[in-house]
Length: 201
Ligand SMILES: [Zn+2]
Image (cartoon, rainbow, N blue to C red; front, side):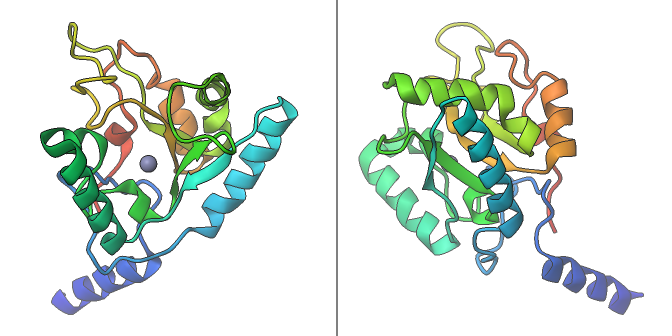
Protein backbone atom coordinates (compact mmCIF):
# COMPACT_ATOMS: atom_id res chain seq x y z
CA UNK A 1 0.00 0.00 0.00
CA UNK A 2 2.78 2.36 0.98
CA UNK A 3 4.63 1.60 -2.24
CA UNK A 4 1.49 2.31 -4.26
CA UNK A 5 1.15 5.64 -2.52
CA UNK A 6 4.77 6.52 -3.22
CA UNK A 7 4.33 5.49 -6.85
CA UNK A 8 1.27 7.72 -7.05
CA UNK A 9 3.23 10.68 -5.70
CA UNK A 10 6.07 10.05 -8.17
CA UNK A 11 3.60 9.93 -11.08
CA UNK A 12 2.05 13.17 -9.89
CA UNK A 13 5.45 14.82 -9.80
CA UNK A 14 6.38 13.54 -13.26
CA UNK A 15 3.14 14.86 -14.72
CA UNK A 16 3.96 18.31 -13.37
CA UNK A 17 1.81 20.71 -11.42
CA UNK A 18 -1.86 20.71 -12.50
CA UNK A 19 -3.21 23.95 -13.99
CA UNK A 20 -5.17 24.68 -10.79
CA UNK A 21 -2.19 24.40 -8.44
CA UNK A 22 -2.45 26.86 -5.57
CA UNK A 23 0.63 29.00 -5.16
CA UNK A 24 0.36 31.62 -2.44
CA UNK A 25 2.21 32.72 0.69
CA UNK A 26 1.27 29.48 2.44
CA UNK A 27 1.45 26.89 -0.34
CA UNK A 28 4.57 26.84 -2.47
CA UNK A 29 6.49 24.88 -5.09
CA UNK A 30 9.66 22.89 -4.36
CA UNK A 31 13.00 24.45 -5.33
CA UNK A 32 13.65 21.62 -7.83
CA UNK A 33 10.41 22.24 -9.73
CA UNK A 34 11.73 23.79 -12.92
CA UNK A 35 9.20 23.21 -15.74
CA UNK A 36 10.10 26.19 -17.93
CA UNK A 37 7.49 28.10 -19.91
CA UNK A 38 4.60 25.74 -20.79
CA UNK A 39 3.66 25.09 -24.44
CA UNK A 40 -0.11 25.11 -23.75
CA UNK A 41 0.20 28.53 -22.14
CA UNK A 42 2.15 29.93 -25.08
CA UNK A 43 -0.44 28.55 -27.53
CA UNK A 44 -3.24 30.21 -25.56
CA UNK A 45 -1.18 33.42 -25.38
CA UNK A 46 -0.86 33.41 -29.19
CA UNK A 47 -4.64 33.10 -29.58
CA UNK A 48 -5.22 35.87 -27.01
CA UNK A 49 -2.76 38.17 -28.73
CA UNK A 50 -4.25 37.55 -32.17
CA UNK A 51 -7.77 38.35 -30.95
CA UNK A 52 -6.55 41.49 -29.17
CA UNK A 53 -4.81 42.76 -32.28
CA UNK A 54 -8.17 42.70 -34.10
CA UNK A 55 -9.31 45.30 -31.53
CA UNK A 56 -6.15 47.35 -32.03
CA UNK A 57 -4.62 46.15 -28.76
CA UNK A 58 -0.94 45.25 -28.70
CA UNK A 59 0.83 43.28 -26.00
CA UNK A 60 4.11 41.64 -25.25
CA UNK A 61 5.40 39.32 -22.51
CA UNK A 62 7.28 41.51 -20.03
CA UNK A 63 8.10 38.65 -17.67
CA UNK A 64 7.38 34.94 -18.14
CA UNK A 65 8.81 31.85 -16.49
CA UNK A 66 10.89 32.42 -13.39
CA UNK A 67 12.89 29.64 -11.76
CA UNK A 68 13.18 29.31 -7.99
CA UNK A 69 16.72 30.69 -8.12
CA UNK A 70 15.73 33.67 -10.25
CA UNK A 71 12.80 34.48 -7.94
CA UNK A 72 15.26 34.45 -5.03
CA UNK A 73 17.24 37.21 -6.79
CA UNK A 74 14.10 39.21 -7.63
CA UNK A 75 12.90 39.03 -4.05
CA UNK A 76 16.27 40.03 -2.62
CA UNK A 77 16.21 43.10 -4.87
CA UNK A 78 12.67 44.01 -3.77
CA UNK A 79 13.63 43.65 -0.11
CA UNK A 80 16.62 45.94 -0.66
CA UNK A 81 14.44 48.57 -2.37
CA UNK A 82 11.13 48.35 -0.54
CA UNK A 83 12.05 46.72 2.79
CA UNK A 84 8.87 45.96 4.76
CA UNK A 85 6.64 46.73 1.78
CA UNK A 86 8.35 44.13 -0.43
CA UNK A 87 5.91 41.28 0.36
CA UNK A 88 3.08 43.35 -1.16
CA UNK A 89 4.88 43.52 -4.51
CA UNK A 90 6.88 40.33 -4.77
CA UNK A 91 7.19 37.01 -3.07
CA UNK A 92 9.82 34.73 -1.66
CA UNK A 93 11.12 31.92 -3.88
CA UNK A 94 8.82 28.92 -4.22
CA UNK A 95 5.75 31.13 -3.77
CA UNK A 96 5.56 32.84 -7.15
CA UNK A 97 3.03 31.76 -9.77
CA UNK A 98 5.73 32.53 -12.35
CA UNK A 99 7.51 29.30 -11.31
CA UNK A 100 4.53 27.32 -12.68
CA UNK A 101 5.45 28.23 -16.26
CA UNK A 102 1.82 29.22 -16.89
CA UNK A 103 1.97 32.83 -15.71
CA UNK A 104 3.06 35.95 -17.57
CA UNK A 105 3.23 39.69 -16.96
CA UNK A 106 2.11 41.60 -20.04
CA UNK A 107 2.51 45.19 -21.18
CA UNK A 108 2.03 47.27 -24.29
CA UNK A 109 5.19 46.83 -26.41
CA UNK A 110 7.88 49.27 -25.28
CA UNK A 111 6.14 50.15 -22.01
CA UNK A 112 6.94 48.97 -18.48
CA UNK A 113 4.23 47.37 -16.33
CA UNK A 114 2.07 50.02 -14.75
CA UNK A 115 -0.97 52.27 -14.60
CA UNK A 116 0.45 55.48 -16.00
CA UNK A 117 -0.04 55.05 -19.72
CA UNK A 118 -3.30 55.08 -21.64
CA UNK A 119 -2.10 52.23 -23.86
CA UNK A 120 -1.54 49.93 -20.89
CA UNK A 121 -4.92 50.99 -19.50
CA UNK A 122 -6.58 49.97 -22.77
CA UNK A 123 -4.71 46.67 -22.72
CA UNK A 124 -5.64 45.85 -19.12
CA UNK A 125 -9.29 46.77 -19.70
CA UNK A 126 -9.32 44.45 -22.70
CA UNK A 127 -7.76 41.64 -20.62
CA UNK A 128 -10.41 42.01 -17.91
CA UNK A 129 -13.13 41.56 -20.54
CA UNK A 130 -11.52 38.84 -22.64
CA UNK A 131 -8.73 36.91 -20.87
CA UNK A 132 -11.09 34.22 -19.54
CA UNK A 133 -12.24 33.38 -23.07
CA UNK A 134 -8.69 32.15 -23.71
CA UNK A 135 -8.23 30.39 -20.38
CA UNK A 136 -6.47 33.16 -18.45
CA UNK A 137 -7.37 34.93 -15.21
CA UNK A 138 -5.95 38.03 -13.56
CA UNK A 139 -4.46 36.60 -10.39
CA UNK A 140 -4.69 39.78 -8.28
CA UNK A 141 -7.76 41.71 -9.46
CA UNK A 142 -8.71 45.12 -8.09
CA UNK A 143 -10.51 44.90 -4.76
CA UNK A 144 -11.93 47.72 -2.70
CA UNK A 145 -12.80 45.47 0.29
CA UNK A 146 -13.13 46.95 3.77
CA UNK A 147 -12.80 50.71 4.14
CA UNK A 148 -10.24 53.24 3.06
CA UNK A 149 -7.26 52.85 2.74
CA UNK A 150 -7.60 49.09 2.66
CA UNK A 151 -7.96 48.51 -1.05
CA UNK A 152 -5.28 46.76 -3.01
CA UNK A 153 -3.79 49.69 -4.88
CA UNK A 154 -2.08 50.34 -1.54
CA UNK A 155 -2.81 47.88 1.20
CA UNK A 156 -4.12 44.55 -0.02
CA UNK A 157 -6.47 42.70 2.28
CA UNK A 158 -8.45 40.37 0.03
CA UNK A 159 -5.59 39.63 -2.37
CA UNK A 160 -2.06 38.90 -1.22
CA UNK A 161 -0.49 41.51 -3.50
CA UNK A 162 -1.35 44.92 -4.82
CA UNK A 163 -3.64 45.10 -7.84
CA UNK A 164 -1.70 43.60 -10.76
CA UNK A 165 -3.76 43.87 -13.97
CA UNK A 166 -0.69 42.74 -15.95
CA UNK A 167 -0.21 39.40 -14.16
CA UNK A 168 -2.25 36.73 -15.95
CA UNK A 169 -2.21 32.99 -15.37
CA UNK A 170 -3.35 30.25 -17.75
CA UNK A 171 -5.66 27.74 -16.05
CA UNK A 172 -7.69 26.47 -19.01
CA UNK A 173 -10.90 27.85 -20.46
CA UNK A 174 -13.37 25.85 -18.32
CA UNK A 175 -11.95 26.96 -14.97
CA UNK A 176 -11.26 30.51 -16.17
CA UNK A 177 -14.89 30.84 -17.29
CA UNK A 178 -16.12 29.48 -13.94
CA UNK A 179 -14.03 31.99 -11.99
CA UNK A 180 -15.16 34.82 -14.27
CA UNK A 181 -18.81 33.80 -13.89
CA UNK A 182 -18.38 33.71 -10.10
CA UNK A 183 -17.66 37.45 -10.29
CA UNK A 184 -14.01 37.55 -9.27
CA UNK A 185 -13.54 40.89 -11.06
CA UNK A 186 -16.17 42.62 -8.92
CA UNK A 187 -14.10 45.00 -6.74
CA UNK A 188 -16.58 44.69 -3.89
CA UNK A 189 -16.49 40.90 -3.72
CA UNK A 190 -14.00 38.80 -1.80
CA UNK A 191 -13.82 36.18 -4.56
CA UNK A 192 -10.32 35.51 -5.86
CA UNK A 193 -9.00 32.93 -8.36
CA UNK A 194 -7.07 31.33 -5.51
CA UNK A 195 -10.39 30.21 -3.98
CA UNK A 196 -10.64 27.75 -6.89
CA UNK A 197 -7.14 26.25 -6.70
CA UNK A 198 -5.73 23.26 -4.83
CA UNK A 199 -2.38 22.70 -3.12
CA UNK A 200 0.13 20.38 -4.88
CA UNK A 201 1.50 17.75 -4.60
ZN1 LIG B 1 3.70 38.61 -12.33
